[in-house]
Length: 292
Image (cartoon, rainbow, N blue to C red):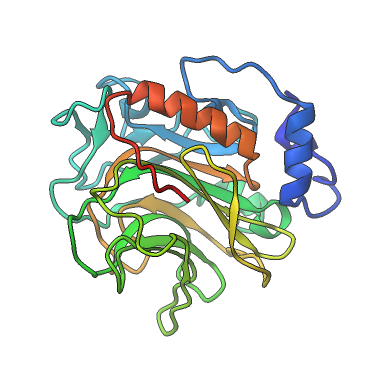
């Protein structure tokens, strides 16, 4: 496949979700089955595969990046922090990470030459859009306290692409945008679907560059628009992480099997291919049937 940054208008202007879909369909390729296709996609900058054996791949140093496409930054990683690292207590068919207690210290910042070259925002959401992907199981059997899941941003108004669960209603998932003084969260899950009892989820959150619309896709289903219009986030500097958020007030201990951060709204066929790969890797997991 040609590099993601050669997609239509990438060098001259905004690349929206529809353009990326069309480009992907024209450039479809056969993926190496050792890794999920999303890890090999040219738009994926950071990919964590918690199903790897101990000491290699994602577990070779901290939580290491195993993305291999054109946008991958090999030295990016997340600290293990207090997560406890690799876990095999429950047999899902491959390992996973399930912190023994609620944590908020598994995050990192691309404060390097890559970020500086893009005005502090490596993902350039207003130009390309962004996708965050996480394979997870709600870590709580009940409760309505806010629990962080996956995020990118810097805590400033209009500069947070954060995902939290359970706030106000158990099993509810919300997206963006949190500030120290004002909360502005959009409900992403249908009713209160994202419960522990419902099962494992492959959940994708897409933020479109052209108008800031936010989409969700789960367990092989198509993108569903949950937020219409507005303006895409623009980070002056960004950190990315799992289990919590930048404010240190949404700590959690959800079970996570895999996570990825992607430049652009990822093509839905790619995500469907990734979901098939994920269900083969963690073949003993019970997958939610009430996916979005």
